[in-house]
Image (cartoon, rainbow, N blue to C red; front, side, top):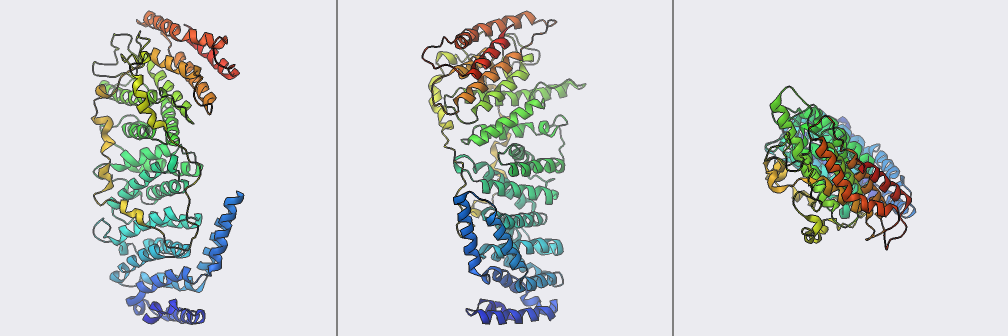
Amino acid sequence: LGWLVKYGLNQPCAEATGICISCLLGIVDVAKPTTLQPVLAELIGSLLMAMSGLEPSALNYLQVRAAGNESSQGATGGYDRLERLRIQLASSGPIAEALNKCLDMVKFVELDAQKKLIPELDSALRKGAGFATRASTADAVTALCNTCPAAFKFPGSSNTNPTVRLLRAIYFASEKERGSTAKDKMTHALGSISMIAPAKAVRILAVKACERYCEASGSNNNPSLRRAAAATVRAIVVRASNHLKDGGPRDVWRKKVLPIAFLGRKDEDAKVAALWNEVWDEGGTAVGLSGDDTFGVLLQEQLLPYLANAILSALRSPSWSNRREACAVVIELVEANVLSPAPRSTTQNLVEERFKQRMKVSSILLNECVKIIRRSRIWDGKGDVCSAASQIAAKWTGVAPMNEAASNHFDARSCAPIVFRADVESLFEGDSWFKGAEQANISVEEAGDSECEQHGEVPEQSVDDVALDMSGEQEFDEDDAEQQNSSDNELADTDVGCVMQSVTLVGLCRILAEQGLRSGGSREGRLPYRVAAFSALSTLLKSVEPNESSEQYNSIVEHQSYVYDAIAPSLFTFVSGGSSGEEKPAPVLVARALECLASAMY
């Protein structure tokens, strides 16, 4: 039996290999588990390697050619159909029959013999030259997690732990695998082993998957990697929800994973968005939020500081798609009234703290959006930033401080998202940006808009029957990836008065009007952006509705007149066609400009 395991399946002669397989099947069929126990782990490892080693090479050639034809002709589905056919052929053969019988014996052998099997599975996954071997290994892991969970229990949570090493190998295999069937098997196996693996190792894997998802966009666009990362986190959250109660010293499930899932729900790939949506729904239920630092009943508000960190990172990303996701999330939060003044409550202290948190997050996000708007470069989706900025500001115009008089809602240390100031030259309070004092810094900011979008996938391996490259596993730092998120408490630990300034209503209206009226720069995407800027301006102007019973009614009407005087002349000139040196404006722009004029009437 030892000779058959070590040499019999590797014979250069096909007839000799067939005789050895027949002999091996006969032994496995009649032998008892105690008889095979000394060689069972090695036997299963050899059978897994033989799944692809004994497969006809013509099948791989045919599948590779099918993939090449799909890429040249634009067809889809042929590669996956051939992959499913190859896996079905391999799983119905004599090797698969012997493998299944051996796996059924594992639960009857001693625990030490079971533990010897885990390194064999890891080796087969890393060294397997075909996806039939890797798919069979994934199936074996899933089966053993259900029948022999104790076999995966090893001390420690580093890469010296065989279970942790196998967990990471499955993740990288799912990331590198090309076919959808093999990917699904890997993901299912990853969810199964995550239930048994050490909690720390699972947290590190989840954080790394989130980071790789964020990096695989823009000029590094890799849809396959994004799908693998989303599927990995979904498998952990759904199948290993027992780990979600323990977020570790950095509480990564609340501070890192769920915020990324909330943004991922807006992914342009519908399948990826569906995966992240499931992570958000299942994870939010399993995490079990509580404590004095949470407000409201909506999960979005309970995680608001951490969502803000994720949104801020996405807005600052060089990837345009990440920025579009962030803007969609901001608009969703505004529509849910999470980025608006807190409603009244019987507990005054709770209201004040909740108000401060909402105000702080709204100020930070509005500041970042305005900084992006004032950059001169137009990119695909920049109009979404205008919409997000105007909707945040519109929620706070009802409590905005009037001139130098402090509002009842703000103390001396607060930074209101938007203020009413009779200073037509300032975008942020007191910065005189329109005079050109700040415009010297725009060239530095422009570096953040210089992305070259890459819409195609990163080239993948053209040959399937090769061992997967696991070099990326070195990125898993044993010091715990959770500790690397030093910016998670940025909102909580930062004095907003030092890093933010309130946006002035007249300044925001003026810059939105200028963006709608602009005529220079690249023609690509200019019209949709100008339309979006005018629409955002109209939304902002309509939000200023003075209450006749308010003490500040006359002051607000006076400020409306001030804003009207600041933007109406240029809009009138544009609508009447009096702009010099510009081609005839599109009718949609004229309509939007008229809408802005109507909204500015007081």
